[in-house]
Image 1 (cartoon, rainbow, N blue to C red):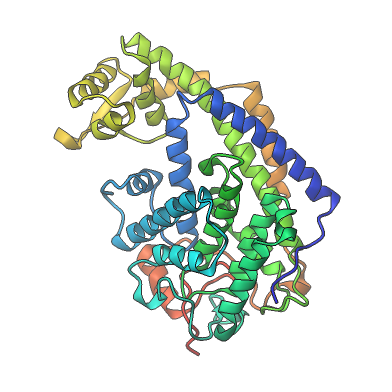
Image 2 (cartoon, rainbow, N blue to C red):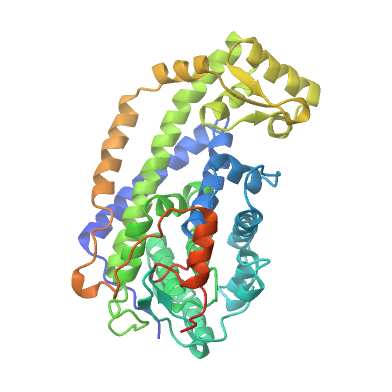
Length: 431
């Protein structure tokens, strides 16, 4: 038996209506601004992947994540984190393929294929196979905070989840709510020895991608979950007040409410970023023209203002120009005092100058952006109130502390995840 679809109250329906309106506007913005949203799409996609893996303790910078996602060599990221981000990238690329497949029908085998990518290179995680023994999740003090169902029930419960996603009830459920329920099912069933949190978020994205309502980089909530991890954990925890898998007393209502608010908040953040990006790109276009360059050069300035260096190879790939043409454009922007070179030879990269940053600081104000900011602040304040003490799992729920990678990995080997549902590199119980 899996968790039941909860009743959706008036507030959830109101927020679903708000979300539909924001997403409609986002779709129009993306269609009307294809000339300047390329960089934003790339950044949003890389940020979603970086945030989702960072929840599990695989940390790197936005610049390094973009390099990994675009299959370039990162400079400062350890191999374990590179593998985790690259595995997530592979899985999300399969999500896009499955989303467009007319033969896709929510089978357990599809989930196992995705897990094989997520857990690539980690033999103890049994990539592409369900867990074969019991696990429990404990907090930093060793208190058990969640007990998933026995391993013998995993395949059956996962099959029930897939059957529900094929059902008439699921088809009649708003896509965001359907995605939230799929996310919850993976989290509480905990089908794998490692990667359950990442898989829950990937399955969530797959449900939405199947709907095709919005471009994938702007439909996911991984970035928001990465920034509000403690609220995310608390909302999932509230679905299992007994600290164990129990659909009879479990209630998905708090989690679904959180997920709908999270989607609305993420959509507003994307709307804000797109609105601001339009203003920024118009500035960059004017500055490129000032330097005597065509509009394509504005993308290098735009990327630099986002804190991401421009390189000859990526500039060539984006615009389909030759190496000499790319070099000429970038050097011209340097000569104009808008970019400055860092490094030498083929490793040279171009970053924003103080003059470019100052020009943007003076140009970025907008009443439209301010209005969206007010709505975002209101949603953040009410994103997810902490669950009542009576349903808080033993030991409480807290996000993992920010520590150095070596210390984090040492602690992860000693205890299981610090949260009750999304895996934080879950390990089987040993005590």
